[in-house]
Image 1 (cartoon, rainbow, N blue to C red):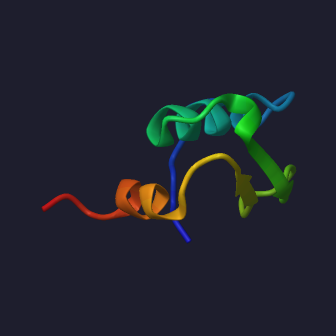
Image 2: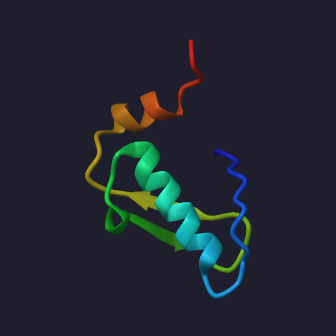
Amino acid sequence: RIRIALTAPPVDGAANEALVRFLAGHFGLKRHQIVIQSGERGRDKTLLLTGAPLQSIRDALAPPD
């Protein structure tokens, strides 16, 4: 579980789009490789990231040394 604060308003999917764009950039993925599986209308979301090795996701989430 991670917590991300966005500045996009939760109107017309703007916050979801901002989240997907942010995560795509952070993990080096394309936007279509990130899917909101549940929670599209809520604060808590379950996401599916495809096309990236699990270790690269873990490395990207690890705190800096």
